[in-house]
Length: 163
Ligand code: GDP
Ligand code: MG
Image (cartoon, rainbow, N blue to C red):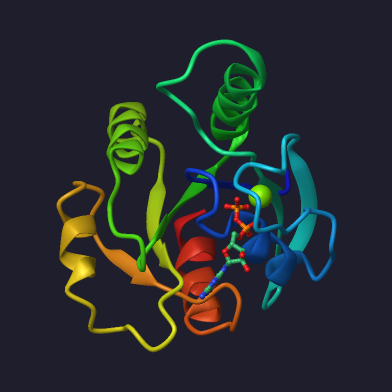
């Protein structure tokens, strides 16, 4: 079975940007509008000889009720359930939000292998904001820049090791 890696996180952290970099497709819609990608998108990715499926999600919205937000949360929960590994993405520039903490709590409870990825880290690698994310109790925080590529291959090395 080809392993599955799910990209999860609140809207606008850069999930679709990372998806596109990993799969080298434009399947996920990258936009400046939070939460535009409302369906799960699957793509194939490769690291060395390892091949895996990447799932982009529309964003976990634990505090909203009804309509599109509930649907987004539902499909994200399904993507997490189906995944062998979760890449939980946060925005290093924005810092840790209440929504990030809610998602972290959910993932901790679930106990699924999870790597905490601090995106938008280009030029900010020693940022004090990293400390906030260590408090989430998900272990190491991996700074990357999905848009520019820094840290992405190193992250994938760890991801395939964890599969
Ligand atoms: P999603 O909602 O989590 O799928 O986020 P998107 O991939 O649509 O990205 C949201 C916004 O963040 C877009 O304006 C992206 O260009 C921007 N973005 C994504 N990755 C990076 C990054 O590594 N650095 C910076 N500075 N911006 C990024
Ligand atoms: Mg998206």
